[in-house]
Length: 267
Image (cartoon, rainbow, N blue to C red; front, side):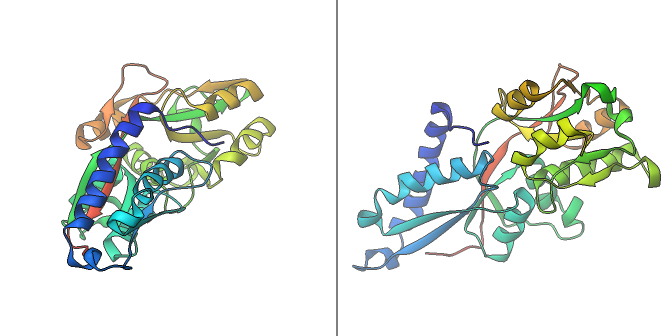
């Protein structure tokens, strides 16, 4: 399910456009007639939020292709972790990533243990997102403890959702049978999977109000799982880019951010 880009996001997108074009116009390569330079923007799945945001950015940039010679291309990817690694390797010039993934990469934690990405730079912060876990009402899953050993969609490898869940589960200290049975499903497949019992819970990191959450609520009865407790408090304290929220059912948040590497010289 594709969520629309709000006007407030479009204002921020214009700032990104200024960065893209500003970098391009100062380089000699763009002054030569007929030359084009390419800026690839890593986003996410087609049915997510990051792809339409990246597409909107590129549409605005490409309106001035004949003036600046910059061709912007939104790339569908598996998500934040993939985008970060692709920026680091030079495969992508820009990427949209979760703030906690950025935190790990820059600090050399999580998937970047011992390998901090110190050339990482932020262009801007986009919109608030909250960690949201939905469970079927008849599963009687009310809190994190109820997820132990259950089939939970936590996103595929390379997604920010999976990285965030891995951090939560590590902080909980779960081992062996306590660990969830991780499932990596596309967002458009999770609604029917949760209602039919293929999965017991579905984890999202998404801005609210969310069309996907509304669609899930309309499809079958669900609970919003409380993401609280000492382990979460400790994780929040360590990850300064994640903000505690007062509402127990949705108690962790972050922001997707537009990133690039200081070492990239595409133009």
